[in-house]
Length: 130
Image (cartoon, rainbow, N blue to C red; front, top):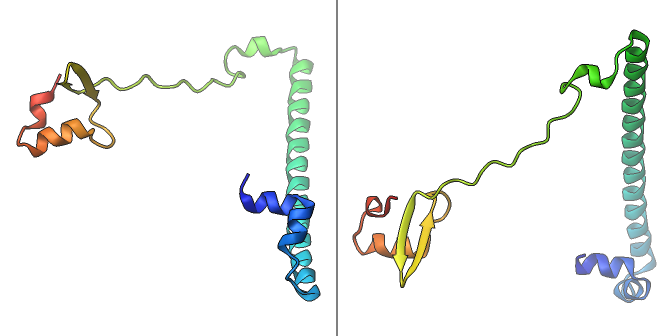
């Protein structure tokens, strides 16, 4: 939590932070917070309505399937959302040995310092191909 939010949510710290504000400035601050609160409440209400509509649609489809005599098992893998598979890590493309330690690099992202130093010394990246 940021320091601002810690002050805002802690009663005594908040009171100490706003002690130099005038009453009018405090009212403006309260009005802004009320506006944010109303917006957040309306967003949450809209989200709840969307969830309720989605659940109602799911129930409607489930009843239609039941009326026809289908079950989720009859659909096979169509109804089940496929889990996103994490792709395999990229294989290393370059390799260098420094002080007995083998350092590999895929060729993507920022170039490791050891490769950069060797390239600056005049070597080619082709020298490091696996």
